[in-house]
Amino acid sequence: MLVRPDFSHRAAVTADEHCWVPSPQAGVERVMLDRLGGERARATSLVRYAPHSIFPAHAHPGGEEIRVLSGTFSDGSGHHGPGCYLRNPPGSAHQPSSADGALIFVKLWQMPADDTRTVRIDSRDATVWQRDGTQEVCRLHETDHERVCLWRLPPGHLLRPDTPGGAELLVIEGQVADGVTVLGPLGWLRLPPGDATALRVGASGATLYLKTGHLAGLAT
Image (cartoon, rainbow, N blue to C red):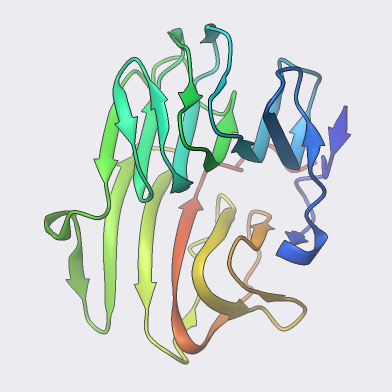
């Protein structure tokens, strides 16, 4: 299966364009934002768990990155509410579930084998945020090939992602526009390496998940 597979071009999906499709497990459905492969795929998705849904235990040979957007996502490491960020490194395994339902942003098979760090960060904790001028940043993960942060940006801010290795963002709150598309909450944008697009934050400010550097070598 191929969903937005050309990493040399910009890709954007607004919340109005979300197409929810069932997963192999009852009670779990997803929006495929990009995907290369079948059920074992390099994939970026929004995943929605119905209340009392349980996904069978499984391994993640290529690693898994999760940001909980709403509800409570649970696995062997605990119960994770809105704002929690999880990284399960290559070779990890778990059995996810949700007692009251959950919406999560998930990235699969996008970690090198030497990225072995397990991460659990709750962005509701004020101590994980740092002021950077008029912005606030929560640093989630950084390696030689990628940087993952949450940003709280003021109204009208002009964001220029560092894109030598590409950039990807998910709008958590507020609105941003890139001159082509206006993205509100749960809007997703992928910029190829070298793209110089500037993003203007809307009148109410914005909170964004932003990942940079990880698309180097994927563009063809």
